[in-house]
Image (cartoon, rainbow, N blue to C red; front, side):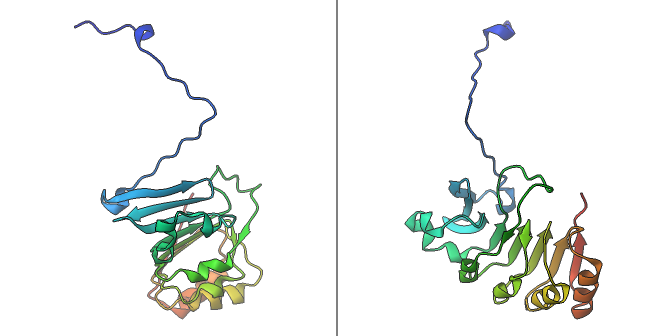
Length: 184
């Protein structure tokens, strides 16, 4: 059989549409996208929320009822000011929304471009892995106290926005804590 000429192959061009891709391999092929919005993405496992990507502007009331009733059972939460391409120099930092305290089972918590002055409000979450990227805080000692209040904490991944003073102080608090620098 003869190969078709390049000009004989039809082309499709989409303009003005955003596309989204999700790598769900970390859920061993069992995950699926339950909700997609420019300010919130919910990935589910067995139709229950598992990972929630949020911006502070999203109102949980905008979730469909079947997702909203179980959203606070999610295990992973990622908070950042936007899902669009982030230019570190021009992005505005966001604050931790008060309603995050309603989550119950978050063991993986990632903050990107977030002010952490109210981190202590989340101390009751069973966070095991805390990821801090491009964070901002006013008081190092307050941040250290906030981090040390996470009773289940096993690992912190961090970038250069977390000072050596904070890293060393947290390491003194719990020497078996895994501290992993994020290299970019």
